[in-house]
Length: 148
Ligand code: DQA
Image (tube, rainbow, N blue to C red; front, side, top):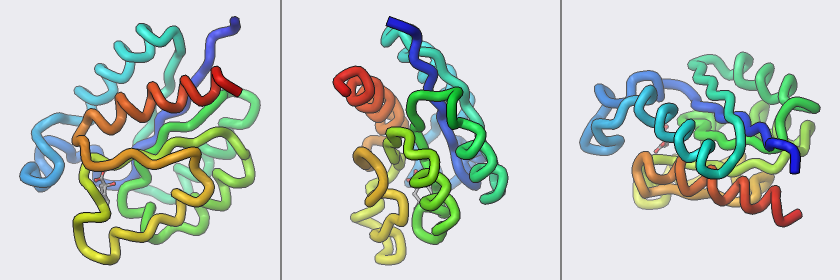
């Protein structure tokens, strides 16, 4: 079995995790999350590339460049979840299995966070478990790819 390569994308303001509204997002930093994801990836026998941007176009570029290099995408689109047709179209275009994750439970929060442009083209969405949403999401994505 060849090693799966997973692209992990973090959207805007997630570089501020740890500082940013800790009562909602917790104390874990993005560096902590990426370090733990690397550990989980080793256990699962996959390799990871993690990328964060505050810019929609930079995320679109990463998604387009994923074609032929990655087997799946784990994404926390952050605020772009609720606004970005461009991210959704890029994900639909490359057609790689995608799992959407959120630290907070977006369905329990303001109504503008209830809608996701990404969810309809994702394999699934995991939210509300804090940083754990990412680790669950990685496992779910890898299991999904391996079961295909
Ligand atoms: C978030 C939820 C979004 O609504 C918000 O804009 C974020 C973070 C989360 O991980 O809980 O930036 O994606």
